[in-house]
Image (cartoon, rainbow, N blue to C red; front, side, top):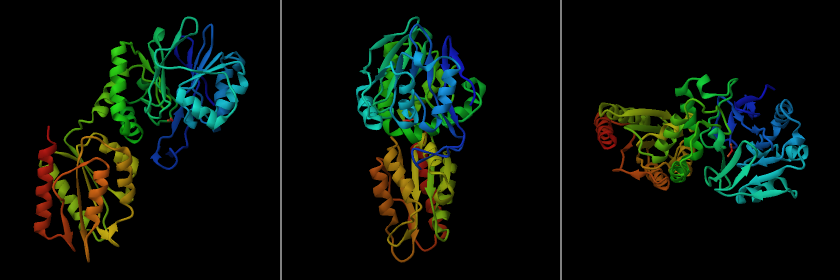
Length: 397
Ligand code: FEO
């Protein structure tokens, strides 16, 4: 089950490692490296536990707590976020520390009562409220829509330590706890996948919250999120990455996502890619049937163009392309241009369906993309290459 990890004087990670989870948020987000559910114990004149863990790992959390403290001595329980991966162990922890006061946001209170029922000694807190533990203070910062309405950060000014729950997290199961113990580029890559698939629809709120935190003038030495590694060496790296992702300016990069029946649409995808590359753009190309949707969204995050292709089948797009478009509609990437392309035999129609879905995703459609009958001739592929070059020009710095 492992041991607690000290992250500051008398402050410990008491979370758990889930090595085996491969799909998160139901079946929506792939987690090939597993994840962690991080919980933090602050031992002071008053003892506080910030967040719990996913219910199946309750025993693991309790075991780690008992290595440090009799759980009955926990005075305060802070629930930064009610999603069950962080609040699942709450009912058991409540039984083990029956006198602990529970602190949460107003929206969290509604959710906690709904999930777990019971009459507890809840105290609703809002931004600016503080709770003195002794040497340390817990300062609460509401963070609605990062990524649920109830989400909240807890900040400990004496340690310059931010406990932001889901924000700044990564789905990584590891034997180490800190960013300086792994490869920064890899950790940031997993943070990008996490941001793209969980926080991208809320980029406006992320930007606002980052500005608000900056205006508060608080110093941040360590960021300890509720998933993955603790940012103790590179808090600036993840803060600036979040600012970049939330601003959604992107870079000269295009994502081409498609599928194909008899390779005509595929030939078009490759010709578009050739044109984009000739125009100086980076391209990430995904065949929907063999690609991980969460990985596609990760690449969409900093792309400026999204091209989606499908042949027409039964007056519709290929079923395998639909989930990608659904994901784009849900995640609402900002500041992207888009184009539909594809081939057809008896009758077209796929292109219009893709265009409608791209519009629903708030992706700005550029000129109508190529829609070709039967197989593309050389001239058709030349036209795709020219379109690719034109898109590269539009997304250049
Ligand atoms: Fe990690 Fe929103 O739960």
